[in-house]
Length: 99
Image (cartoon, rainbow, N blue to C red; front, side, top):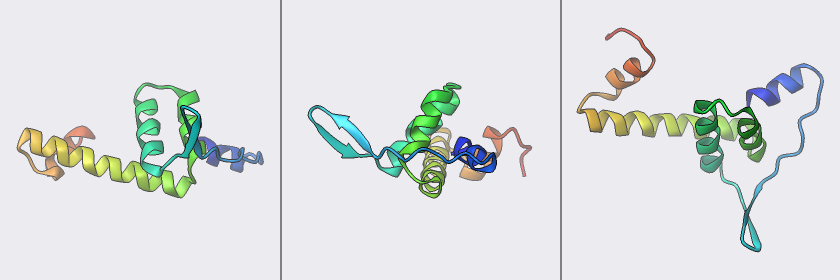
């Protein structure tokens, strides 16, 4: 997503999004949650090529929504696992002091 923004800022037009996933002989469209999952995993693994690929699957707005939804679900899952509030977990993950 940020790569697209950088390209736009520097006057380069982003490539047309690829919205299909190869599945055997049939192709199906990527959805925003799939793009978000791949994007976040690639960011965690510092895989720039995969980041760029996932960012090309959906619009920047859709990717942002998907990443936000993934973050919310991850914080909720960790909070349940740790028996803590989502607020405490989110602050801990970001290295912030307890509020």
